[in-house]
Image (cartoon, rainbow, N blue to C red):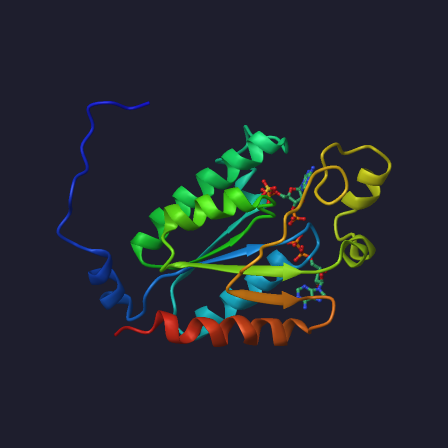
Length: 198
Ligand SMILES: Nc1ncnc2c1ncn2[C@@H]1O[C@H](COP(=O)(O)OS(=O)(=O)O)[C@@H](OP(=O)(O)O)[C@H]1O
Ligand SMILES: Nc1ncnc2c1ncn2[C@@H]1O[C@H](COP(=O)(O)OP(=O)(O)O)[C@@H](O)[C@H]1O
């Protein structure tokens, strides 16, 4: 715990940076099972935003676990710490101006609520990638489900570790029934009016 610290205020504000970029920042928080389509969708949404001249940055589970969070495992406690750090990093990047996309399983409701509270409800947009585990397992993009079924990976989400689906996400896309293009369109349609300057 840090003590004897005091918040410092700076002249250049988040609103100044939004004016410079000509768009506001939000945090698009993608959540879903492994293989549900978080990275694929975040990638496609980011590409569409970049083409439209918006500054973006994506934080992805696999990537962040190679660096900042390489000390964390997949126990419930470490997943909570993973999401706590990510929500702090997302806040910093968002305050710098870019639209932030995060692609983490983030399996627990309480951790996503903590992220919503720390990022701010006005900025936090929860995108639930709804995809039945049977479909994720059929895709088995990285061969992890097969390993988990064989008992080679412990605490695997959806098999031996919980996933709590969001109850009131801002956006839901079902990647088992919708095309990637339709999923992207749904996210962009929700997002567009929310990043316009007043
Ligand atoms: N035990 C276990 N359970 C789930 N996932 C596992 C596990 N071990 C490794 N992986 C790989 O780690 C990626 C998920 O990391 P996250 O940081 O998003 O997970 S979490 O939010 O902390 O639950 C996940 O990436 P995605 O498949 O993109 O979801 C996997 O590649
Ligand atoms: N509508 C869709 N949206 C996103 N991914 C889809 C969709 N339909 C099929 N997929 C496929 O599902 C897989 C999802 O993998 P990935 O994006 O790595 O998931 P995650 O990041 O959640 O682990 C990819 O092979 C992708 O091509």
